[in-house]
Image 1 (cartoon, rainbow, N blue to C red):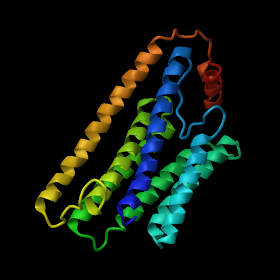
Image 2 (image 1 turned 90 degrees about the horizontal axis):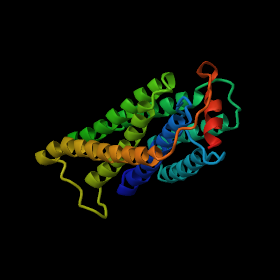
Image 3 (image 1 turned 45 degrees about the vertical axis):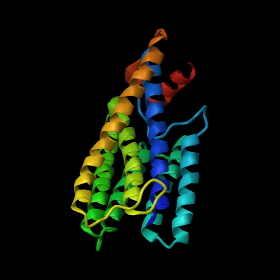
Image 4 (image 1 turned 60 degrees about the vertical axis):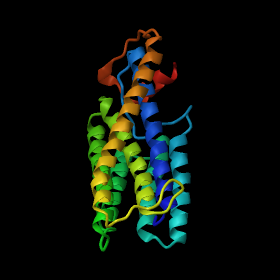
Length: 255
């Protein structure tokens, strides 16, 4: 990961998965609302009964893992390995081979906390500028970890999985930014680490990332609201006390 591409590749994975989560969460929420079905979040989403997210995650992470092992980057390869494990768990959930509920949430939380630990101990001997850049990344990772645990408890609150999506996209864009700042890239020259203005601007640019992603996020929510507003709610009788995640999915797929 000691190059621009080494940061751009995982950043791209996080951005793609984060956008996928956001779009699928909004789709499920508005379809649930129009169908009078309780909303229930999930860690992963399928496409027409095919576990496209889990399969794509395993394939992309396998590529990153092989590349990092070839470069003898054990820490970075380990990070890919833990996220690859989440893809395998997602597949096991899809095929109903896990006897314990919510292990997909546990595996994602586990991968995030391992990622935070790896980055924390990856900073020994680095200059202050490098440390600040990665501490901001660790802050996003730990926040995502907490939000994921909250979602496991409150699956009917749509804002929690949406916030998880937002944070993963933010992690991805910040990966790109760190790569642009520290290494030669197609867009700019590396920043000077001994320049006090570089250190001051780091926090400023991080807030720009937060703000721009949030504005784009609100825009997409408004677009989905407009699209689904045209649909008349389907009246159903649904006993929420006996509801389950599988029943919710079946009702939505009928539409």
